Length: 68
Image: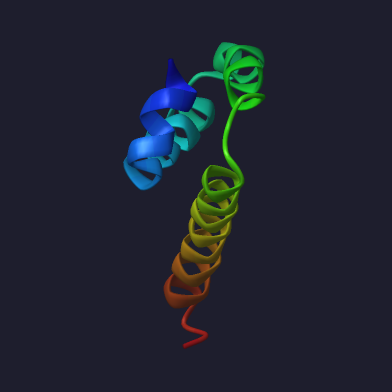
């Protein structure tokens, strides 16, 4: 079901999946099972969402520390 919805509109679906994985540790295995059936575009969007989350965390740490 996730793959069908992600095919039509991948950005909000991937943001929701990444948020669920960040918040709930027990969702990792379930999400991995669902992610097996994604399209190549959905994998690209997933990569973008993960990288944007990582950059956001690094920027927040740098700004709080006074580095920029």
